[in-house]
Length: 126
Image (tube, rainbow, N blue to C red; front, side, top):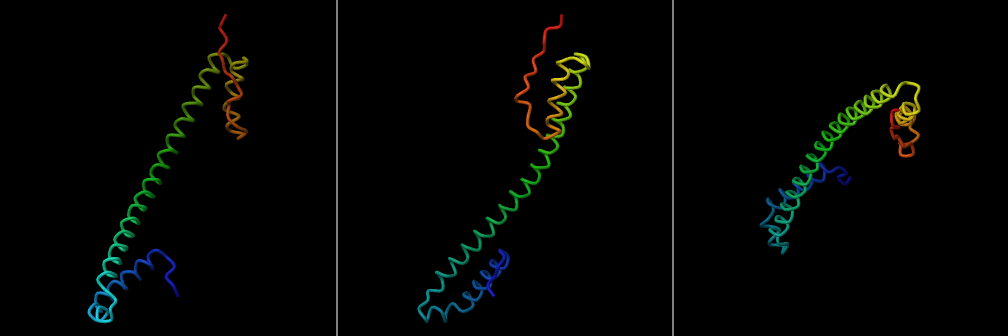
């Protein structure tokens, strides 16, 4: 059965490299140029391992970035919600401006889109 995972393929490459090193003289007598295969295997194994290490670092960085984004997003929502509450309170609970502001938040909670279509422009206080 052929190796199916990355780790299995690396292990197969390492075992093949070791085998070529052990049998170098015999392979050279057969005209195979074992050193060329050894160099290619060493380079391929080193590159594969280095690339895998880089990928693992990127995965860890992505995980950390995702966690940071979730924290920032939650903070942004709390600040936005607080701003809506503060402005709505300043205008008064039953005013048109307060209703517009509260609609901004309720649209997000309902998931029916953003608030691009709701212009919130404070009317001058008379």
